Length: 149
Image (cartoon, rainbow, N blue to C red):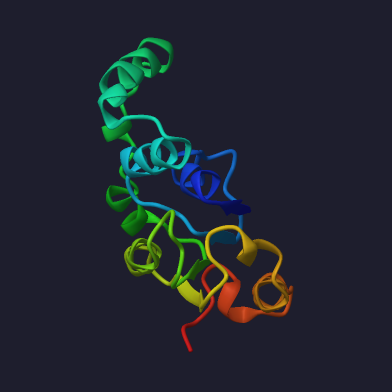
């Protein structure tokens, strides 16, 4: 499973018995959904005061509130290998959020870039190389139940 930004964070809440990827590559994830919404508001110039009615509307459709999506409560329960990729100069989701995400996920590994921001890291050669190594069939550190090194 590979996800970026909101898509990366959404995978934390999409886990079901019938859908359990062997490995995860999550690029620039955030921990708390509301933070991601505020960042998106900021990026397009929407005032924060719109959040309350926006959340009420989303709640009327989905029956959930953004507060229900706090990854920090679920990550310690994960048992699959994960590669978390984040850039130190990400202006949308600070690197510290990705580092905490990786720390909370047992056995996750953090790969840090510097200067690629939030979007350019997606197809940067160093990131692609790291992802390919992590997903390689012979990568024992990315295999469930592999002994720690």
